[in-house]
Image (cartoon, rainbow, N blue to C red; front, top):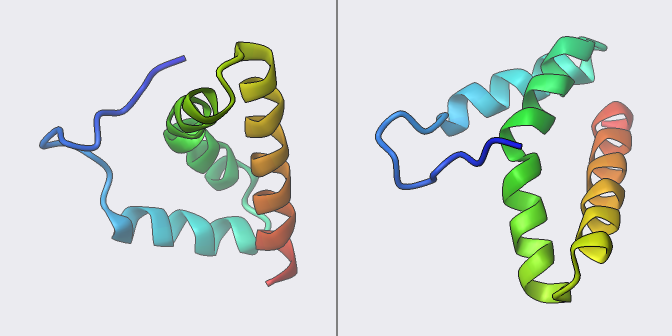
Length: 75
């Protein structure tokens, strides 16, 4: 799992994410995969800091990603 550093100079921009979200809403599976790839590690790290257990953090991350992808399809 690769973790993007939000303080790095080459961090993805909000505009790039918005473009991926728009494409994912239109059914572009690759765009959704790119979004998940960009943010998965960040979500996991936050969940791990909150839950203190790797398996619980993985479960929480999965739930968050499933719910967010479901919501993107509804909008």
